[in-house]
Image (cartoon, rainbow, N blue to C red; front, side, top):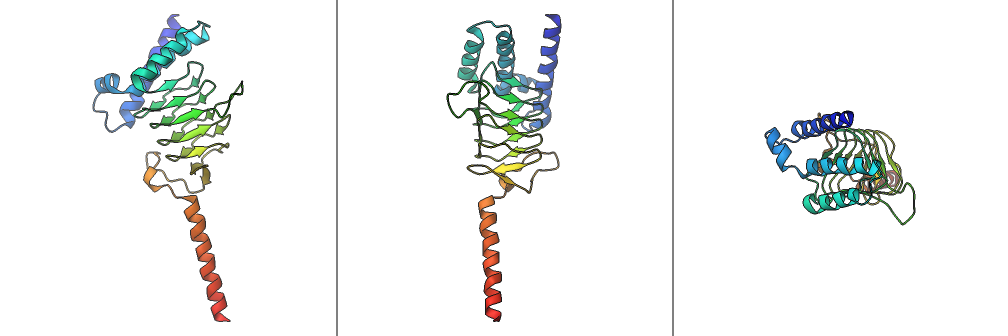
Length: 216
């Protein structure tokens, strides 16, 4: 029991530290502890998850329900979440029952890690390490988002995403040009639109064909 408590305190310190170091709006540690619903939701999740692993009925889901009412963030107690998850803003986030999240993941508001039907078993996404999921993105089904991936805001991801990829769109498509800043953060306002890229490519080909025809 003492070891469990020590590990819990260690994770809490990491959760506080990752917010303080990565959110420029965090002015001091007290503000982080008292004013960040993402941190509050994580604390309540870890308690509910521990009770769930101890096969205690009802209370894990009840804690999850209260957390959703208080923070606007819904995390199923059976979900598996790694270390240093940063939930930025957090309102409207849903993390499903069989979701697996790795270490050093960043989720923005309105993100859904959900299922696609009523099937049993693994039906929610697996998110790798060092992944950023942009605001409003939906990652649906038993799919895997590889390490170091970026999911653009508003994207709907329904297929596996290989490591070191950036995906955007509905449904999401891989964009081969990963746009991040010097700190490794996703630049939401500079993600290229793959449809626009395809149209521009076609327009360029048409211009070349017109030039070839005009020469004859």
